[in-house]
Image 1 (tube, rainbow, N blue to C red):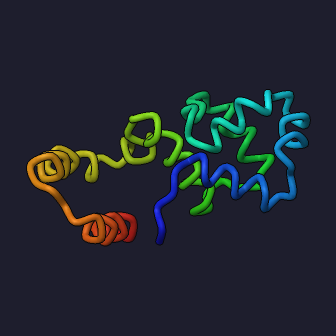
Image 2 (cartoon, helix red, strand yellow):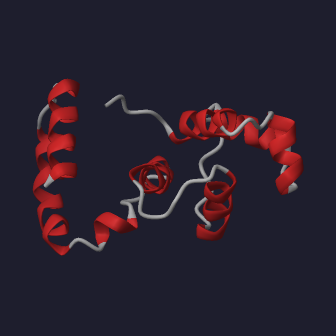
Image 3 (cartoon, rainbow, N blue to C red):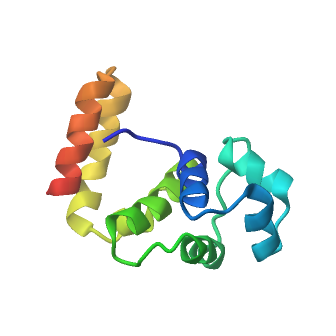
Amino acid sequence: MKTIAFGEMFKELRIRNNYTLRGFCQALGKDPGNISKLERGLLPPPQDQQQLESYAAMFKLKPGTEEYERFFILAAIQAGRIPSKLLSDKQLLSKLPILFRTITGQRIDPEKLDIFIEQLRNS
């Protein structure tokens, strides 16, 4: 699975739901310039849960689906936070220090890291 940034996913979802940039912004009362910057990665994703949920609703993302979860996880990661879903998994949380020490202690091949992430997702 290709890893994409939040802004890329946001834009793909907007287009898939047949919204022009201006039409989407008009429906939500948002500034097109800021949403354009968000999509291009020049602005970080909003961290307000209600704001993210309103975007998810506009994109017809269903709670509990992989795509819905990914939307919120990407928003947290891009803001430099550990996603709340991961923080609620005590077993995974206990292993994060080891993961971080491993990642910072040596260079990991991006392909191997993608495989590792997939294994974490499937465990």
